[in-house]
Image (cartoon, rainbow, N blue to C red; front, side):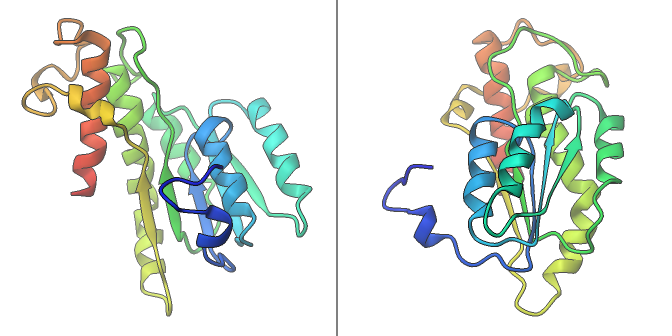
Length: 201
């Protein structure tokens, strides 16, 4: 992963010994890159989500080939489905969770609804990640009480949030495809990224 503004992950990421990490959308792109970068710092275990087990194979093999090898678990998880998210959360087996990186997302897709009837980009980019976080939040809170704990929640967002509706999130139409939204698919994307940022406020 290239450095940004002087940040060098090889030098600036601290020792992760004993820490458990979860990354959503970890089978490709930024998620996969983040996992491989963090894996070089000796974490205890890395969980990562994705839609299909076949897409996780190469990453699992890469983590096993490291010296020392990094223990990892793939959680099959469809962020368009709250029941799939709930099922994935039950497969988390550790009694601690130090780092949760909400990376999974989609951008500028055709209008549609999640399996639970929420506008697609909001459902995946915000609601899906937030739902998984809420299932695992008790573990993170317990971890935060441990000596020398340094628990982190990281949400991957975008300057695209600037395209959000004037009220931030149009809750009145969130259970529709919002096809009439100003800026169309980019407005819906901006709304989801605005929601990501608002979660951190």
